[in-house]
Length: 209
Image (cartoon, rainbow, N blue to C red; front, side):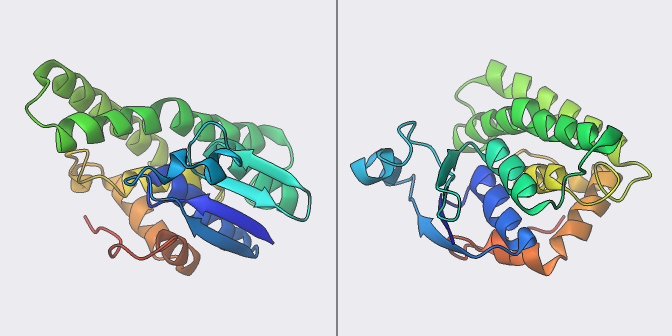
């Protein structure tokens, strides 16, 4: 059994979707970051960094934070959704790191400036609007002629998809990125992803372009 401490953010959704895809038994615990639950002592005892998501794997005794590290751990634990060797393995990790190092942080700033604080910082809005579009163009180019980011569905897809699901907050029209749109809808149809999207609780249907 795995305990999952999470909230309804793209980083949290990566792990709930992954746990559903891997078919692992888990218990979700809602850490409401809008109320400051991440700073309560009970949660800080699990992750002193005060960030979600976190898993506690009672089979191995491992407690792990950071969504990318968790995805790699679950893939290695199960031997699924990450090739064991060769170029496909390295490319899967490459696109996971692309999400962790660029796509996610940039889109997080886009949320902040373009949606939650529109009009407060025009320079920052322009910067993140342009960089967000550049990253969507990169993703669209990668997905041209591909069903998934690498050869088969992988943890790289699981990492990127939840951020794309916030496209409305990025002020992005997915119809302008046809290969991203096709990939997004292909994944959105997966029953496992739909279940993971509703963890720790249902908020809305999956946004449609």
